[in-house]
Image 1 (cartoon, helix red, strand yellow):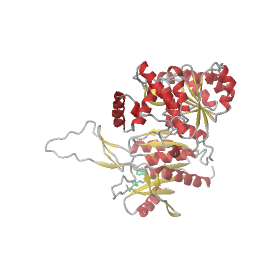
Image 2 (image 1 turned 120 degrees about the horizontal axis):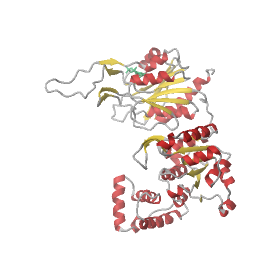
Image 3 (image 1 turned 120 degrees about the vertical axis):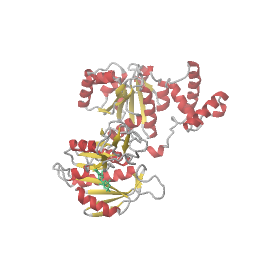
Image 4 (image 1 turned 30 degrees about the vertical axis):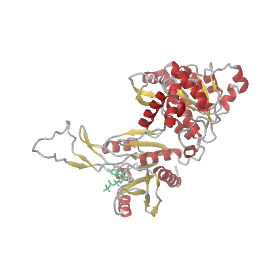
Length: 485
Ligand code: CTP
């Protein structure tokens, strides 16, 4: 394994490294790796310093080992283990994220071969892409050596999947219109494998009719897309749609495309609610609960992995939307109810959200002021609509309706009562009390549930929320299998 000998660095550099490592909670070695990567991506430093860093990088990468993963490999291997990805890096500021993508893919056991366009090389170097992929980086269509060694046809066919990240407006236009005038566009046309594009461009470019046309044409041709996301643009103060999906979202999209496991929920539309709701008191205050959205989001992702067309309705949460899932963001219970009803009809609906039972009768238009001598304001509360019960008794009721029951006492009895009252087929009951001072189910990463149905109560052992989600998705697939489409 390659290593950096911190001892051999200048005192001044060592001191800087020590300070940054402490600030970032990393080891000095990891901090050095992060800085080297940033340097080769051109993010800091003068030319002289980059020379110095490049020398270190060469020493690092000349050893036997591939680029050193910072995450334990065994924990993340899975679908990508042994898969071959051809990554085409287009010319855009988001190209630096493609370097992290290489690392993430390799951590998961994939072999990554990189093609870079001429424009991409203005943003990141072939040296860094080569170091991270531990392979030669291909740039020229008419490079005699490359053509002799492998050739662009083999390059495009030896991969299991082609990924374009960042996919620029130019690369999209070339593929949509069949152009092949450089290595990247030729490889894209020559391939017999699926192509995944992660577009990244200025919001105005992304909204341009020509780009919209090409996007839709590529979709019809079977090209898969991940992102772009809404957010701040790196190169300007602009905010809008056009930001490249994060490397881990691209990894999730790649895994979904390469996942050859059976898809028992293909063709099934499933609504999932997740997270808390916020009920406003005035413009700055609201009533909420401790729900993190982790369980609901994990269920949405697990259902999508089984091929379902998932529509996630999420209250305000601090976690990212699950990759590739259409997510509607709402604040209040009333908004959540409207969103769910608009999504009907569906084959199934899973109500994981911790919906606030009450809201204030009216939210004050201005911040409520503290008045001396008047005491606290009396909040007039009204009951929120019960979204699960509404859908459970709806004329467009899905074939399968699943609710959750968060209880601190009489778990099964309360869950059975909810099953009947709300018109659900299954209730996933969980004990949300945490007397031992642990983080508990709400906000924590683990869950222990019982599945309550008319057939009885099934107790599942304690497991991670992801495992509960996977198992519940399998149970939903099983239940829907018996229903004729
Ligand atoms: N639920 C809902 N709309 C509400 C309240 C709850 O859709 N206004 C759903 C939840 O998403 C969950 C189930 O109903 O699937 C049970 O939620 P829970 O909070 O356990 O029960 P409540 O009906 O709120 O009853 P209580 O708080 O009295 O236990």
